[in-house]
Image (cartoon, rainbow, N blue to C red; front, side, top):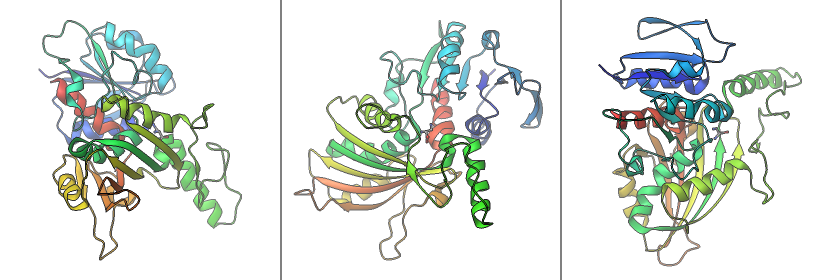
Length: 340
Ligand code: 2RA
């Protein structure tokens, strides 16, 4: 008698990962509705030994739904997220549509579970919307928060090296295609990013704002403040798209209110949920995107005292995490588990 789950955007990279994670974690669903655009409606897919027909996403799709996992873009979430909630579903939205709404919890279960408040499935009188943070925010804060809780971060500087998957399955396909074309001496096909991606890197493709930051960077700034419930913490970020398939890497510099030495920091991180420490200086072995791909945990290494700060008030760390999994689908399913 588990929940009825709707997967919105089921044919996308994150939609497919929703299913994978629901299965991996034996999520106790009673039934699943596979929802996508008209273009995909009618297609069949099998999941956990059952055959499903993908249905076209409509308001009625949410009648009787308990949990609706959305990853079909911001416009679909803006249009149908509230409709699903009005029809009684608890929406876990992977888009940026509602993340900064004051009334919408923005949740990383290992980081700020209390933000969920009392939203639960059982006995609920109405639906709700819960927002999944942006992938680069989730990956960064999985490592930075345990340290923040101990020594209070006053300033965080993040440089991200973001994978193709963040731009969707088509971007992953184009990266592979371009790599082959370049190696074959052919002109690379540039449909997604309008510039060569293979053997290259570039400032994140999100729109650039009047302050010179792009939207991806401002998400890190704003979401960190909301998740930490700290409007004073100073955050700046530079987000770069790199030719890596599905895991983000992030260099994070932290300045603390109280001193925090690197050994203590390493111990804190070793005990942090959802984090593994890969920090072998002798072997020069540190986190890599390939090593964290398709895995749940975020890996952290290069933990070192920031030598530009006095008295151990600063640390530099390097974090890698799977963008589709912990950066999106896993985090959303973990939120859904908290509703049970
Ligand atoms: C990106 N964070 O990596 C975005 C995806 N939501 O482009």
